Image (cartoon, rainbow, N blue to C red; front, top):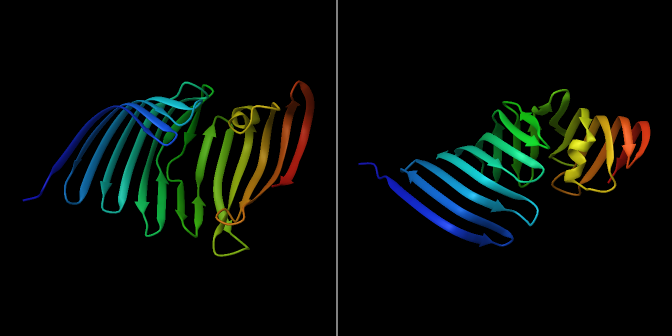
Length: 220
């Protein structure tokens, strides 16, 4: 007879390092080869400014594959997110196969398209056909073999991306606006990372000054 186990927990408040949780409810059911985990949290705080109220997680684990679904909202820049993916567990990493998902940033809905794939191991990173879009704004993430070793370099191709939708996540000042197309290349992402930028921005504004068309080239 197959053994079935069930775990239920209700945790009013908990903290792990800098992360905190409130009104956490866990329902875990499983057998010898399959586990289903459903969890809800009234609030998840990653830091003082980034908090996710009303988060739901549905996780189905069978052998070396996990189907993950996350629905959440936030009280700041990230308005809401509905994320879905299939995760294959490797010996030293994971392969993530993205399913149709959405993230709402500054009241704009970005769509993560189906079948994008990302593999991350201790020594290897590979990305294929990861596409994120909002109307005419598109970001495509892929990889090419690295000239520096056995891994891959990551390339993010931008098409008419509004900098004002992205840059506030990186820095608040100075305020830079514009419509950007081009490429960002991350070389040797698991080693000595270098980032190369080759892009052109239309309708560029720096703080309150209008600059027009600007070429962006550099590396870090």
